[in-house]
Amino acid sequence: MIGGKEKEVFNKLREHLEAVDATLSAFRQLFVAYLSGDLDKAERLLREVEDKESYADELRRSIELMLYGGAFIPASRGDYIRLSELIDNVADAAESAAHTLMFAKPNIPGDLESEILRLVDESLKTYTYLKEAVLALEESVEKALELSKETETQEERADKIEYDLLRKIFSRNDISTYAKLIWNQVITKVGDIADRAEDASDQVMLIAVKRR
Image (cartoon, rainbow, N blue to C red):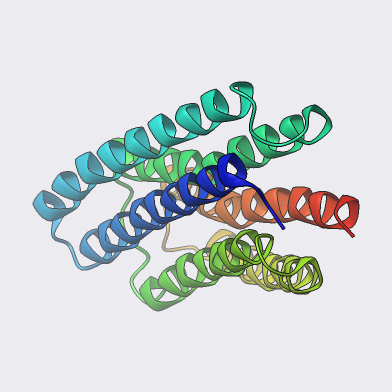
């Protein structure tokens, strides 16, 4: 069982998870707009990504203040502070990918739009498993461990799609060297979303094992 202050932290963690989720939703919409050629909409969505990421960052700081204020035993506080930081890194990764795409605006490889969007979706799915794992900490450490492992497996799926997509882009003669270099950065940063989610799932595992 957890006490009142701990419950408050979990409620704030839930808010933080939703804020990161909203950042990722705007990020996906941005990619859809960009790949369909609607740059004005993509620019508006970039500002939305930035605003939602900033809000997620505010929630992270409020979680840290709650923990420093005495929630959880001292030995556990650092674990939850680290978890909130790692969750926030997922939103940071999405914002970074969005900035790279919109600042450079590379030409879109004609027949690879669906594969680029597939990478976005598979990377975001990694976060979905992470979110469920964090929420499970409140009720069942065994479920949290199971979902953390699912997060890791999903990250590996996203990695494979990332590498396959990069290989296709660099093998093409109809894509300029500049566009290849920019897409390499963008695709790697999209893959970073899955990587950061997997990093956070490792922290969930650590917390769950300690609470067994």
